Image 1 (cartoon, rainbow over the protein chains, first blue to last red):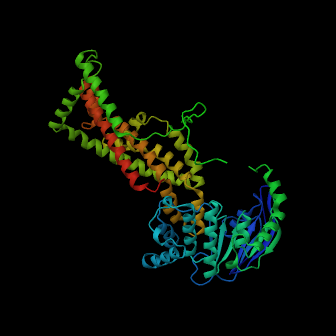
Image 2: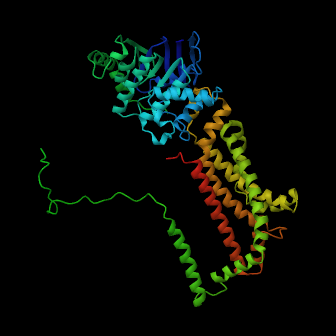
Image 3: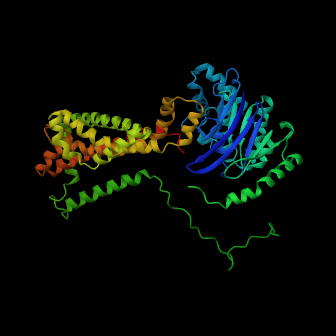
Length: 255
Length: 274
């Protein structure tokens, strides 16, 4: 299943935040969206998953989600969004219950996704007992449980410290290598973008427009920390963004 | 370069320990202190009334109150008073709290209900419910109905306000998460909104149940033969301070028990809080 953004524009009252964004998200690829703060990256992601409606343009789903897919467009949030009163496995069963999956069937899915995210030993733990990295792994496991066609990742590693971020990037690459998934990955961290993205979409400052789409050919499993090719890409991206990031930083926040 | 192996000098003129200035602002529970304060206050009253520097007209002697209490217990009157009072309290508070929680959740979830009912609740909150007792007697009769109604009405308003505040405070990102996974509206309410609002609802219940106990006495002002409130009011009109205090102590104990039960429920239901 592919996703196509077709001429998306958006404004709050008469305040234009996004102008004519068209983009293809092909199946099996990770598309990273980067841009200065306030350029509408996260808003764009909410449009893709249908949590918000753009003023103009539309998000089109091409083809049908694969068999067994419970929730085609599934988010992973920056702040994890785990229910603090449910255990790790309870948080995952939450998203299965509404599809009528309970008991042994649910048990099987939960065990599988926990094993894939290396959380098997923590099934009964409460979120408050887990570190940030573990919480995000639970959120990833929860997303995997509904077998999504496209994962919509909203700054998933931004709330974590640098070391945990490296570890989780490795985990994401592992997951993708074993079973390629489609993802839209919003981040302000260029290192994450060049590490995980098949395509990196650079948005301009408000009103957000696509400035450039950088394709990175190197296969995901071969990308490593401090890779010179990736560093080159990262430098290029930073040059594209630098002036806008500075201008965005000096701007008053629109209340 | 700092030489880590250099001997540490302390105590010389230019070496000073940094003064501690953190700490405080973090109250911790010390159970026995509360108990000690009670014992101290009662001991002072006992000593004062025995020594004569507190006249028996101002304050009854604690040991006399205890005697009255024992008499009450031995004559069987205690349970004759406690039974009807407890049933009034339980029925009235249960009606008031459950209607209050339901209305509060509705106000928290629907814009029209919110716009329509918040002003109404604000209007009835400050009415002293005791003033409405005659009205309740006309509506529900002089029997138990008017007593239930008074207590229910008194617990309703604070419960509503606490509940919709608690629903407002449920983390919106959790609700968005539920929507993004395609959970039904009812599932989101049941599995995300209600548990998320539970801490606020329970702390609201602490206040509403204390108000219910206060109103119990008011409810028994009219046409109640038995009941803690009736007992206190009768003692009060006779200026029988020992009996008055025995009744007041029962109400206090009731309050302590209710609060302890709520604490138990909180610990069971809210163990997930950090």
